[in-house]
Image (cartoon, rainbow, N blue to C red; front, side):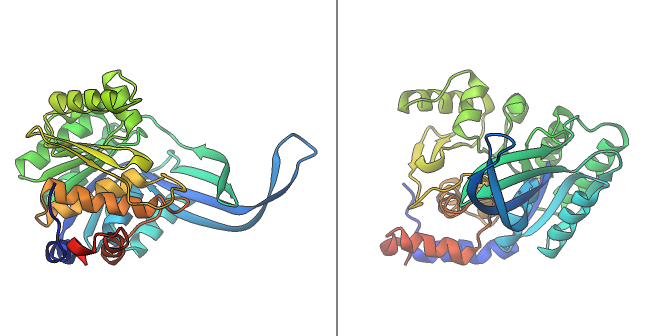
Length: 336
């Protein structure tokens, strides 16, 4: 296993601010109502949540872009929002975080994907979604591809954040991969099961266990099925790395040179895995952009994911928090 010592880690983390990342994907706004449950409704057998506060966070590709920006890198986001309050809010929030949204297309008549979660004492009670999932086409598709071409040309690495909401289609995937290859740029993908066949030849792909298993028709239930799925995917896609994210069990890397690497989670407690995949692909891409090896990038991404799954909802982390995570994990001999 790669020895990521203190000097190397700090060199990589210190270089994050030089990275330029293009992100193609589905933009979401996550809304939260936070409160407590003290009684059951008389109208129906459901809990009454007494709302104490509200908040809004980034979802999907917006969360990836915000993660990239939090790492100190330049994030250029390509996607669509609706001509609605949610779309204007998410663009305003992204701009405030330093994300370049000039290539985000506003499509009249299409609602911005919004997920409302009601949380009572750290437990999700219910989620309500508002979304349109039809594939983009026509003028909107043309504008997306034009923005993507500019973003890829000015970036070190491309991230595709596929949540199946209509931006990442077979057409846009093929165009994105072609643009990145022609420009000599790396491609990191957080995939959706239905598009796996389109991701042949990408640099790295980061499915979770369910996505990976569904893609090859095998449910991952133990070590043997994990190995079967991982190696089958690696062979089918020809990716330099298939990184299967496994929640509280960490991450398993299936490398093009035949090496298998298991990275156990560094989280002491697991509250919520929401957004962990966004964090993994973000950190992986930024680290690769500044010269990390695939294994070094995955080790750093695994630490970042261990930080976000300790929290409820989507959160982002910066280089300082990642460095502290290495020390807190008892790896002081190598990184402290």
